[in-house]
Structures are given as C-alpha cells and as structure tokens.
Length: 55
Image (cartoon, rainbow, N blue to C red; front, side):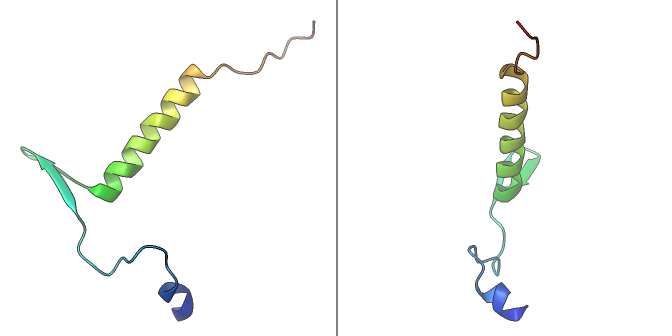
C-alpha cells in the first residue's frame, strides 16, 4: 500500500489552493469537479437519445 501512495500522479502533500469571491471560497479541486458535473449535465440534456423506433 505504501508503494502505491508513492506512485501517485498528483502530490497531495501540500495545502490546497483556494479561489474566493467575496464571502464565497472554493478549492480548485472542488471547482473542477463542480464544472465537470455541469458539463456532463449539459451533455445529458442536449445530446439526443438514440431513436428506438423501428422504421
């Protein structure tokens, strides 16, 4: 298990980076997750379902 932690792609052994506007503050990692969720939601809404009707 210890070897797997040493081979991590991202070094998590440092303080997080935060972005803030006024009273709102969010970490960069959480902001990336939130934005990717919005992108997936938009794709789910705008990409049409396959046509299941037999012609």
